[in-house]
Image 1: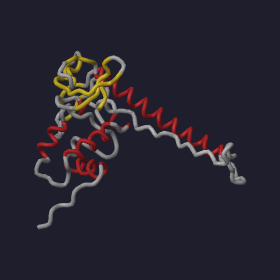
Image 2: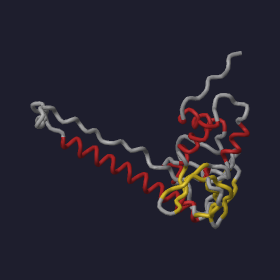
Image 3: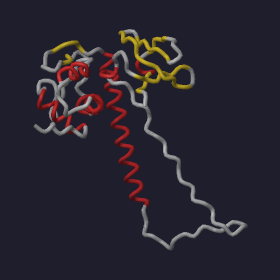
Image 4: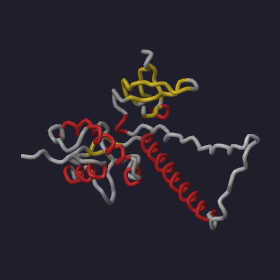
Length: 210
């Protein structure tokens, strides 16, 4: 028997999760806030399914929980659900506020991109005679300078990332330092720096390691 074809992107994985766990995941309509630690539950349930790797599963889960539809579901007093749709912990105010801030920032980024795109379109004019840069004193043309591309900013931690073992960067002083989550508590997150020192910091001071 041929091996099943592996999923190649997050969209396929999310559709598969919605079909396999319909009481937990969905692809349209209102989303349900997920149980903290849902990744471990998924990894155990899908351990024998060769179609999805843990790496793609984690990135797909992050894609799902970053969607506007999901962020709008994370409200104070709402219950998180497990894979079978069973109600669990009540969402705390700090988690709801974090989701609200993420949603606001995401919408602002999209609005800024649309405004920039509209401005660029308005500034475009009919092509004129090709500009020839002036030669310098030696008769050579100045080299074109290309802008330096910057990478995407480090991502903030999602609820699914707040587990022991997650690689993060923590802002200690001026420069972020690599660390690993050791323990998650209500009063902060205990992390261990690569130097061996452990510190407790708020989730807002952490970013996912690239």
